[in-house]
Amino acid sequence: SQQGEEDPQALSIQEGENATMNCSYKTSINNLQWYRQNSGRGLVHLILIRSNEREKHSGRLRVTLDTSKKSSSLLITASRAADTASYFCAYNQAGTALIFGKGTTLSVSS
Amino acid sequence: ETGVTQSPTHLIKTRGQQVTLRCSSQSGHNTVSWYQQALGQGPQFIFQYYREEENGRGNFPPRFSGLQFPNYSSELNVNALELDDSALYLCASSAGTGGRDTIYFGEGSWLTVV
Image (cartoon, rainbow over all chains, first blue to last red; front, top):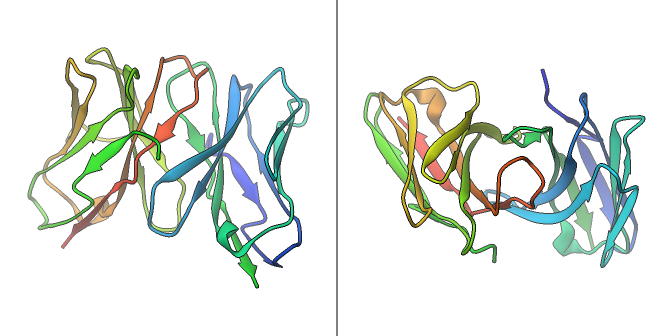
């Protein structure tokens, strides 16, 4: 299967703590995108990182990409209750489809 | 707000019926893709349309079909509905094909087949 994999599947933390989610994939990629999904709703785009980039920041989010290990990580710093959601990585080869993993479910309690 | 709008938001159909889901892409985006997301799973690619032509297809049977219109809006049609078709259907748009652009998703259409 070409499906990506996120790790851990579930993560529970307290407000103010950092949350780290990892993603692994199996093929060469053009880019990798991270999305957030609140329960029962659509996907919100967070960050796109290209295959020639190693790190990107957006507000409290930091994404890294290691193409030699075929892995990426998403770090959310100083988490808030509103960050409670499922997080997905999705990657694209040269083709048309985004390939998703099963996601990491993050729960942030106050 | 992604600029990708989908309708309807929720619908219930009976097994064997047909359904049409609609999507308006973000302004300036000529590429629309459809994904199926079963409960507890990641989205699965159904197909993509670029300038009114199908430009790629995932592992879905022919009873899943689509259209893209000159204004780049799109429809997903599913015939002979099965219980396993119950899922969230997501539309996504981007400015081009080839996988180099940010892909934006709508809020989805929840389909329940009974």
